Image 1 (cartoon, rainbow, N blue to C red):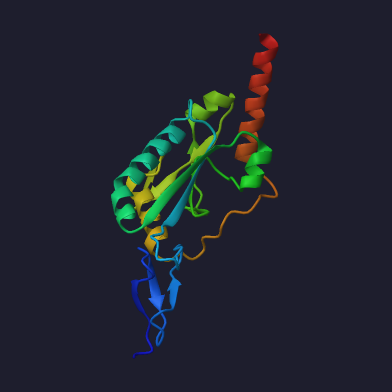
Image 2: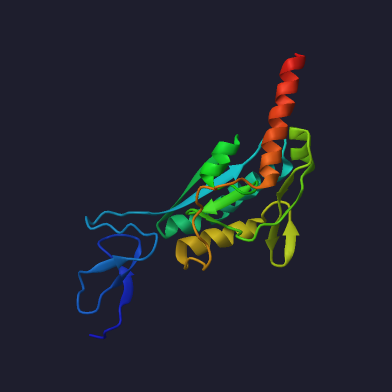
Length: 204
């Protein structure tokens, strides 16, 4: 038998694995797989985190949510056929403390298996978030195929999901860590919003 490993089906699972040379019964799951040894089917999981400041007024957050849901729907059958399931966690970031703990640096943010789908941060003024908090605030700008968008295109999201499900982790994509300090833009948003809400309460 060759010393090279090969890819096949392990123990009834739908996952890919590598069979070590000289041992037909030994399987080592590839990244993100959860290969079982009981003969039962099992699934790999792609975890998606959608973090945002507001889904009531922020047009960028709302459009990002829509594009994310449509992207997942578009690839759902392909993922299911290859034993991959998607889990989505939506989190409204409501305080400086929460933002620090989540490593949240810009709104909106999409992370797949803990990694931001766009590592290079770009922002521009967001009128709807400015109206929400009563001050000028920037929100994320997404760059895809050389063009800038105020919400991530479906193609960008789909590519990120497929890369995480079947490909290699891109270099320079560390998982987020709690922040020591919050970006000034987010500090401004939370403080302006708190001030606006305080003034609204005192006037009522």
